[in-house]
Image (cartoon, rainbow, N blue to C red; front, top):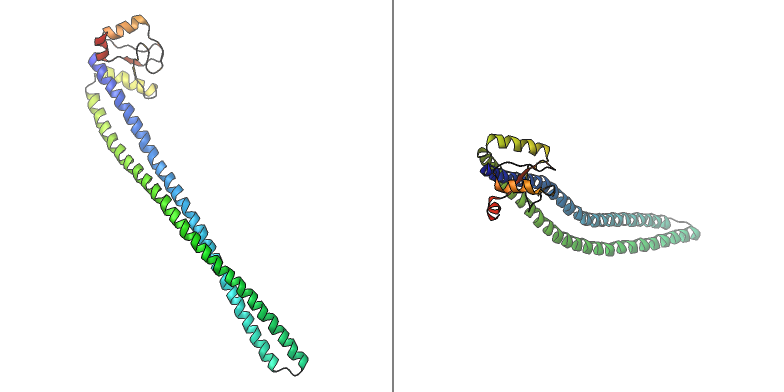
Length: 240
């Protein structure tokens, strides 16, 4: 019985490892997605700055079109002025031309402002790209490590599953049946390693008589509080 309990405890440890690996394997892809999302979110800084540049270019193009329209208007005024028959008409066209020429100067100043603003935005883009690349490199490094960890944990899980099959073959059928029933009822914890004279899971003290029997006999004992199988290592038994 004691040998069977030794293997049963190893099975419990192995099943604990399997559960931990399965949880890790389940969590890692989600962690990778979060990091990828955070990394890609940082790229929005660049996108936002590029949008500013596009808006700047559009505004400048509109102003340039406005200058062309004004120049076309001035051209027509000059043509009409040359055909004027009175000094009053002539002076009126001269006044309109002067007004539109001043208007061109004003619009051209706004174009220059946009050009200077474009230079500043280009500088922002270069800086944000450099910052993003630095951040992205760190994220990519972490993502790579998570994916490597995922692959390693999958390998460990495969090995643990193989170990479980081997261990189950060496356990007497009656013990295995009890173990499987407790695994289902007790949240995956069927065997409790006894710490000193306490149940290692529920931490309830084992009665002296029962504890004495636990370390001196080969019988199976259950915790009187949580009903799990109590296990005490043979090496520790020998020291008693």
